Image (cartoon, rainbow, N blue to C red; front, side):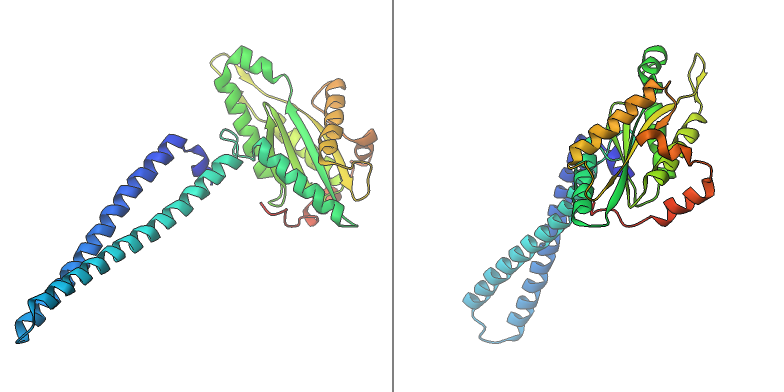
Length: 287
């Protein structure tokens, strides 16, 4: 999947053109060989059968040619089908994942959030958590150290997300330096634990430029959405989480903020929260 995302659209088109030429040559060679074999058999039969009419031989030649042409078409169509399946898989990955960070892009993230919210609404005991965060003072990194370092920061944060969360969790780049995580079947307390863990691990990262070495911090907002809650649309999920992200900024950045900060009051038992988070892992919605 990662290799697919790194490919340019132009390189994919060139690969498809080369595959088209290759498959055409293979199909015609195979058809020609089959036609030659059929003709050879007919000639041998003609030489060993007295009274074999030349007109019949010509008819056999036409039939052999038509069969060979059909064989060429069939082989070519089958090989084209295989190549098109590969092509669509590559294009699907490119359309769903962010080129730089290798996590889901905004469109896919919103689609998956909508699916998770719909599943949550159908299930009487359904619940999930949502984390929204951004990199503190990211604009200053771009302005002072260049976009190359800024891109490296974004890419590293994306990789850190993927290595930190469960396979059932859904990570995406919401836009710019903003990221989001959907955590199916995860209570608020466990989600805050995940947010704190990500914040801590990212703050330990070091990025070097020609001028200096820098570190970064995150501000994170977290909410839990349960069946029958006052949050009645996936748009409100985003809006509500964004409020806590803003509150984390207001509190001085490098912070995790959730509803009334109630989770942070119970943040003493790290092992217990880690066990709850790991035990909550269930398959994500169809991706």
